[in-house]
Image 1 (cartoon, rainbow, N blue to C red):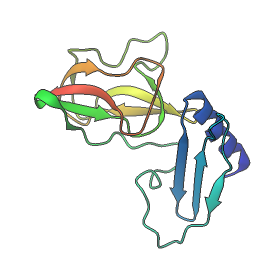
Image 2 (tube, rainbow, N blue to C red; image 1 turned 30 degrees about the vertical axis):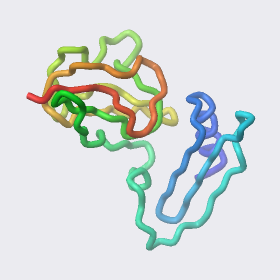
Image 3 (cartoon, rainbow, N blue to C red; image 1 turned 90 degrees about the horizontal axis):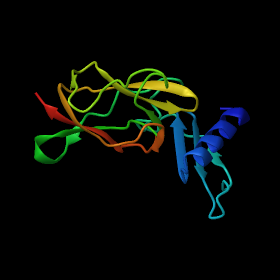
Image 4 (cartoon, one colour; image 1 turned 90 degrees about the vertical axis):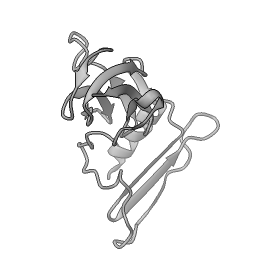
Length: 156
């Protein structure tokens, strides 16, 4: 990771009001915290031992994203599709395009339900569940956190 990448992460943190960011790879670990004055706190990084187990985030190659976290149980027998990363949520592939899904849309395991932009990379998020969209929990073009519920799905 070079200085340009670190600056891009800091800009993403400022843009999305993220207070803390941590990334761990095989031989590299970086942790960024924003100070109380809104600016970034000092960058901390260290060499990680090669035998250290990797976190789920660390196992994702740069420029890719896991399709989605497994949906978890919500209320009334509904499942939630949660954000697999920090980024900006988009309901459609472009501003001129129709949203991927609406309330009442049927989805299957491979259906793309949204995009999350992280570090200028657009990551398609798949439903990974078969059902009907009952709620859209995030506004278009708003920041999302790791694990934040995006959609509620009634399984079919």
